[in-house]
Length: 242
Image (cartoon, rainbow, N blue to C red; front, top):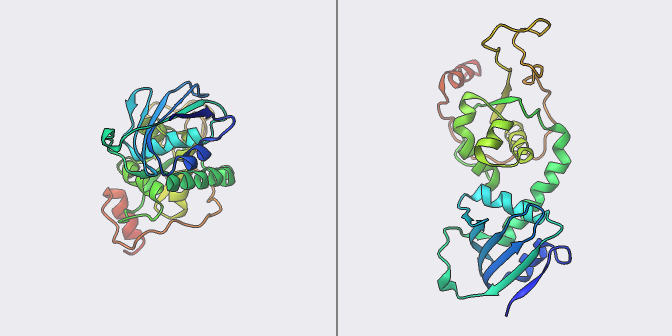
């Protein structure tokens, strides 16, 4: 028997709770994003997720889409019971736990938004821990570490990683509070600077100079010797007496 309804009457988080012990396929359509989702659920775990027919295999991307569904105020859903043998997805995400962590992130973004750095501020990695206790933050850290070695801004990371800009700003904020990254000054343009512009500043001003934000509870990082992150990392280590 199918279960169906509208997200305006039953929010996505409540739909997930209602389907916690069921096995089947959940489809969502007529959403504000005009997309169509298909989720395969087995006993409270998300085993497969598609968006407009495309399989989503990356955990961060899946959570990004789940966050959009949490915030959806309209859209149709329909759940059909099926057999577990029909599912071949590569995901194995505890959906209730994921929903709780997504809700926490949404609340924290709202709380610390005013402390986020400018989207053009470039950040650079200072060290490489073995693991971060915050699962989402650890996924982001591992994925973006190579880019952060050279220095990268939130706009670039959001584009390259297909993540919402505000969520990237939030992750960079938490990494900065944890002491894993630091802002760097905007590099001087290769062409001659325009009149009236301070040396070393880009068109939008020197976006690399920011004040240190108020700190939320810092993510727990397992103690480990920092890995080599190139010349800058070695210079920093030498300056710190490491």
